[in-house]
Each structure stands twice: as structure tokens, then as C-alpha cells.
Amino acid sequence: MQAAQSVPTPAVAAERGIIQRTLRSAAWLGWQIESNWTDPLIFIIYSVIKPLASASILVVMYSVITGGNFDSPIFPYIYLGNAFYIYVAAVLNGVSWCVIEDREQYRMLKYIYIAPVVIPVYLLGRGFAKFVFGSLAVFITISFGVLFLNVPLDLAQVDWPLFVLSLFLGLLMLAMMGLTLGSVILLIVNNVYFVGEAVAGALFLFSGAIFPLDVLPAWLRPIGYIIPITYWLELVRRALIGSVAESFQTLAGFSNGQLIGILVSLTIVFTIIAFVTFRYCDHQAREKGYIDRVTNF
Amino acid sequence: MATVDRVYKNTGARLFLQTIVGRAYPRVVGLLRERTWFFFDVLLPVISVSAYVFIYRAIQAPDIYIGFVVMGGAMTAFWLNILWAMSSQMYWEKETGNLALYIMAPNSLMAILLGMALGGLFATSQRALVITLAGLFLFGVQIQVSSYLLLFSVFMLTMIALYGMGMMTASLFLLLNREAWHFSNMAQEPVYLASGFYFPIKSFDFWIAAGASIIPLTLGLDAMRQLSFPGGVELGFIHVNIEVAVLAVLSIVFLFGARWLLGFMERLAIREGRLTDARR
Image (cartoon, rainbow over all chains, first blue to last red; front, side):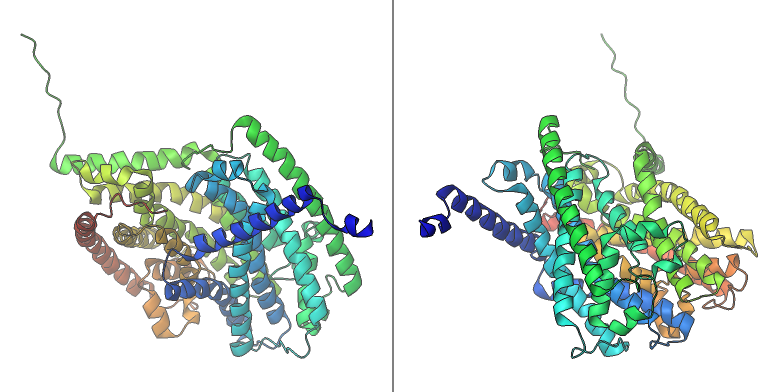
């Protein structure tokens, strides 16, 4: 009897099979779209140049003012925050951008809808490819910082369990935020290209990614405290270079456990929001005929 | 016997001018008609500017750097316009099927690009102005223009050279397909870095800064900063007069280069059958 209970019913097994297949196919499709437009050498150059240039702007700004004093804790604070923020743009935009590409550019969204796939899983799968590229950019940026800019990252000192846990939670949270954004984009026919960038830009400004929240005017700081990315970046910094995080008072009152608790809670909240939003927007988009709407914007 | 009225058609210089106006018109009207575009075009650079301003505040930079960031942020509007609405425009036109019509029509492709440039310049100037005003208002930046005439001249020369460069790169994009989007995407941050959008270009080694001066915004931005901010001269790369001279040379080179390259690339694209080759 117990053995019979542990065996999934054919319907559940089929559902699992669809989810796995959707995820795998969407991730592979995303990878092909991102990478097969050129040969591998140009693709690698393309993948390296953009994140390094972004980081270099900050490095030059910092060195101009401080005379190249890279030993100050503010430098690794800025550098690591900027490096890990690559994930925010990649995952959050990756999921939402998929809706735009498939509907407007490739005009395939209607065919995806009639295929035996789970749409939210498909969107997340497409975002997975961006996550892979984002990981490459994060790795390159951090390696550059450690090798050439004295970013004091000692692999032996890294709190690996905290890093892995916070990275997992952060990426899950970002994927859910991306799904929410993608769902909303299903209902927007103009200007969708700007929405993801605007959201990522606003989060960049308010999450303390590249400067401590204390630098913001007091009336803007509360925005930073309700954004989960703020806590995620703080956890990542603490895991990688604990001394840097200790130098800034913004979230010093929170222990690691409290920060993880906040991040888990906010991730659960965003997961619920993502699926509720998707259900609503998906229904509305079908009702209004937005699934195959092409605006040529 | 019925008489048929002959339709008067412009030719030569009149057709050239008519084409410029005809292509500039939708660009201006299109960008003004969709008001939310204006909102996002201003909002996104203001967010970036704000982030960079707060970084400078976090590391206690002098106030002049805040002004530099605001001016650099405003000029990003022009660079983005060059990348996405000039250089890669031929790619979009190919995707939507207009490129073949441009080539078939009895007008000059150069005039089409000039119209695109003038329309884009007009619409982008409004955005840049709003970004500058927003930056000045939000961060209390003090400006002190030493010569309005020189500032205006530098700005216009920078724009002529910049849009000339945009026309040159547009002709290169005639041959591209999907990679056009990626190349434009790749040219954003590296140019922000090389041209010193958020810091004085003098921060680089002289020869690196001199090399970066091939992008007109590098010297244009540096000259405008020298002319607009008290203390800007001390952080300037080279004397403004030299920058003006170099910008004038770049303007001529890029405009003539665009004309030559456009003809060459058009012939090449026709020969290789790439004008209607849309590979998504």
C-alpha cells in the first residue's frame, strides 16, 4: 500500500514530464538565441566587454577621487554590488524580455501557447539562459577585481554555505520578480522595451548596490528597505568579504539569520505575487487578444 | 480629348532636401506622438545619473564631479540615439521591409540618413535638455558658462561629427542581421567608459584619451564641461580651441566618409543580396 502511494499517478508523472521538458527546451532555446548569432570568439569578446566596461566606469570614478586607494572598504562594497547586480539585470530582464521577443520579434508566442508547455515554466527556462550568461559576466568581473584591483576576496575566508544559500534565494527571488514583470508585459503593447530597464534601473538606485543606503536622502531610504535585493546583496557581501559589510551601518543591526529570514519571507511573497499576477495577466491577455498582438514598436 | 495633368516631381537638390524633410518628419512626430517614450527616455538616464551622483557622494567627491555626471548623463541620450536610431536603423528597416523601398525610390540614401539624423537630433535635444534641467534641479549643480557662443559652437560641431559618425556606422549596418542588435548593445558601456561620460577624460593616460577622441562626444563633452563649470578648465583634457579644431576636422571627415562608405556598402549589399535578407 505504501509503495503504491509513493508511485506518482500517470497524470502527475505526465505533468512533471511536461514541466521538465518545458524547462529544458526553453533553456536550450534561450541559449541558442543568445549565442548563435556569431562565432564563439566574437561571442566571448561580447560577453566580456560589456560587464568589464561597466565595472571600469566605477573603478575610474573611484580612483579619480581617491587617488587609487583601493584598500578602503567602500571600494569592494561598490565593486561586488555592481558585479552581483549583473544577475538582477540578467534574470529579471531575461524572463520579461522573453515575452517581448517571442511576441513582437519572433512572433512565436502564440505557437508557444498552443504547444504542450507550461507557460510560466517556459518563461523561467528562457531566463535561465540569461542566468548562465550573467554568471559568466559576474565571474569575469569579480576575477578582474581580485587580480588587478585588490578586491580582498580570499576563497579560504569565504562563508560558502551562506554564499550558496543566499545566491540560491536571490536568484529564485529575481526569477519570481522577472515572472511578475513578464506577466505585466503580457498586457502592455507599447513601450515594453523600456519597462524592464526602468525597473532594473530603479532597483539599482534604491537597493544600495553601488553605494550604502545611508547616502540616499532620508525620505528615499525606506524604498531600499522594502526591496529584497538590498538584503540579498548584503548577504552576498557578508559571505564573500565579511569585513566590508561590517564597515557600513545600514544593515549592521541585522544578523545573518535575520537577513536570511527576511530574504526567505520576501521570496515567498514574490513567488505568490508572481503566480497570482501571471494567472491574472495571462487570463486578461487571452481575453483581450494580446498574445499574438504585434505593434512593430 | 481629355488632358492629363502632369505631376510635378522634384529632382536634384530639391529632391534631396525634400527627402531630408520627409525622413526627419516621422522621426520628430513619431517621437513626440508617443509621450510615454519621452517619459522613459528621460527617466532612464536620470536614474543612471542619480546612481552615479550618489556614488560620487559616497566617496565624497567635489561638487564639480556631480555636474560632470549630469552633463555626461544628458549626452548619453545622443549616443543612444546614434546607436539605436541611426546605426542600427538600417537593420530595423530591413526587418520591417522598408530598406528595399528606400533603395528603389529615386532619392539619395544619404538624404534619408541626413533626415534621420536631423529629426533624431531635434527630438533627442529635447530629452537631453530635460535630463540636464532635472539633474541641475535634483542635485543643485551650479553652472557658470564662460562663453555661450563657444558652448553652442562646440555642441553643434559635436553633433555634426557625431551624427556623421552615426551615418558612417549606419552604412556598415547595411550588411548586418541579428548581430546588429548585439553590436549596438555592446557599444554602450564601452563608449561611456572611453568617452568619459561620468568622469573627466583627463583621468586617462594622454594617448588613451587621444585615441578615444575619435568618438566626437569625448572632446565635445570635455570642451562643454570646461566651458560650463567653474574649475572645469583645470580638469580639461586639452585647450578648448584645439578641441573645436579637432571636432571640425572630425565633422568633415565623418560626413564625407559616410557619403563614400554608404555608396560602397550599398553596392556591396546589392551585389551580395543582403538588402532583403532578414534572418531573425
